Amino acid sequence: MVAQIGTRAPDFTLPSHLGKDVALGALRGKNVVLAFFPLAWTPV
Image (tube, rainbow, N blue to C red; front, side, top):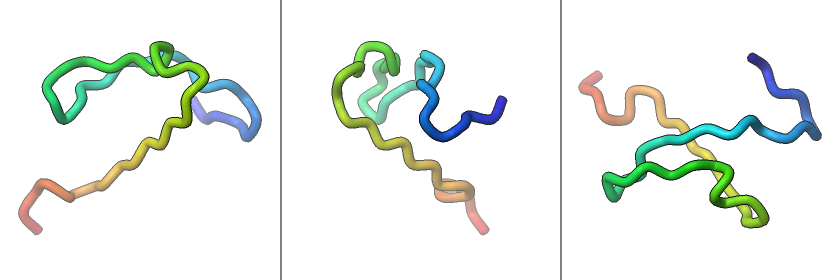
């Protein structure tokens, strides 16, 4: 699925760095930044 600019992101849940799950829907109305770091935690 490819998101288009201006469309609402689908609700999803990811684990946080604190070991708890966080749902995007629980953050509605707040600023959210998602950062992906490919290979950040793997030896190169």
